[in-house]
Amino acid sequence: MSNDQVAIVGYAQSQVQRHAEQPLGELAVETSRRAIADAGLEIGQVDGFVGSAMFPTAGAHAAIDGVSMVTPEWLAQHLGAQPRYSAGYHGMGQIPGSVALAVDAILAGEADYVLMHRALHNPAGSYHGNPTFEAGGFAQWTAPQGFFGPLAMIALPYTEYLQRYGASRSTTAAVAVEARKNGARIPWSHWYERALTEEEYLAAPILADPICRYDCDIPVDGAAAFVFTSAERAVDLPNRPVYVSGYALAQPPPRRLALHWPLDDIMGAGADTVRNLWEDSGVGPTDVDLPQLYDGFSPLVYFWLEALGYCSPGEAHELVRGGGIDSDVPGALPVLSGGGALGNGRMHGIPQMLECYLQLSGRAGNRQRDATIGLASHAAPHVGGAVVYRSGV
Image 1 (cartoon, rainbow, N blue to C red):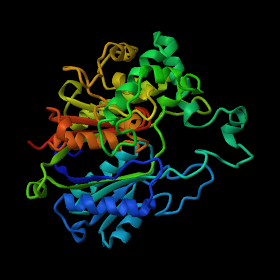
Image 2: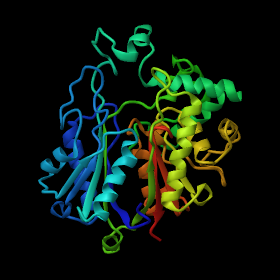
Image 3: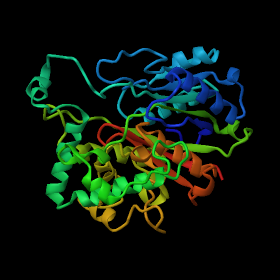
C-alpha cells in the first residue's frame, strides 16, 4: 500500500522504432540519464534501480544483458551509479510489478530516489522463430499442430467472448482504430502520423483465428524510465508530483487447459485483482477519470473494461460499438488516449503508465486532459496488474 506516500517526479521516453540504430543498452542509458535530469537530480543521488528484463528476446536469440535486455544492475553499473538497492521483477504485469518494487523500496527506507526502467528489443529476423525440434510437457500435444505462443493463448478466450456475447470483429476494430488514432498524435510512437481505418483492420490477414495482424502490438526497440521518491522529497523537485495511490498484482488461477485460461477463469481471477486494487488505493471505478487499459492484444481491452466494473459482463463490446472509448467524445472513457501498445509499439505497459504520468503532471502538451486520478493496467486481469495514480495538484 502506498496511499500517496511515493511519487513519480521525472521521466524520459525514447523514440519507439521497429529497429533502433543504437544498441539497446546505450538506448537505456541515454533514456535514464534524461529521466534523472528531468527530475532535477544527479546520477549520484539515485540510489535505487528497479525494472524487468522479462521477455527480452525472441526465438533462438541469446539473452545478453545490455544487448537484448537490460537489467537494473547492468543499467546502474553503466550509469556509474552506486545504488543501495536494486531489484528485478520477473512475473507477468512487469510494469505494475516494477512500480511496486520502487514504492516498497522507498517506504522501507532502502532508497531515497529509485529509477525504474523498461527496455524492449526487437531482434532482426523472424519474430519467435525457433529452431527447436522437440516439444515437451503440455506443448507436445499442441505445438506440432501449430497451436502455441501468445496468439493461441488469446485467440481461444476471445473466441469464447465473441460466441457467448454475440460480439463481432467489426466492433473490435474500433479498439485498434482508437489506439492507432491516438498513437498517430504522439511523436515518439512507432505509428506517429499513421492512423488505421476500419477497412484496413478488416482486410488484415488472420494470424490465429479470430486474431488478425492489427489486434497485435508490433515488436519494437524502445526504452522508458521514471524516477520515484517520497512525497516529502517530491515537493522540492521541479515537476508536479504524480502519486502512487495503490496497486494490485494478479495471482494467476490454476491452469485447467494446456495452453490457455478459459474466459471464466480470466474474469474470475481478474475480479480478485480488481477488488485488491480498489481496496489498496481507496478509490473505485467512478473515481478514475483517466483509465489506461492494456491492449497488447485488442480483446484485452474488453476483459479489463468488464473486470474493472466499467460495464457488466458481456457488455464491453456494446460499450465500444457505441463510441464509449472514443477519447475525442466528451464523457467517453479515454482508455487508449495514450495510444496504448497498439498505438505505440510493444512497450508492454509503459504507454499506459506514461499517459497517466503526463496527464496527471500537466505535461501532455496539446493532448492535455482534465484528469486527477489515473489507472494503468498491464497484461491480462488474471495474470497482470494495475496501478492507481493521483495528481499532485
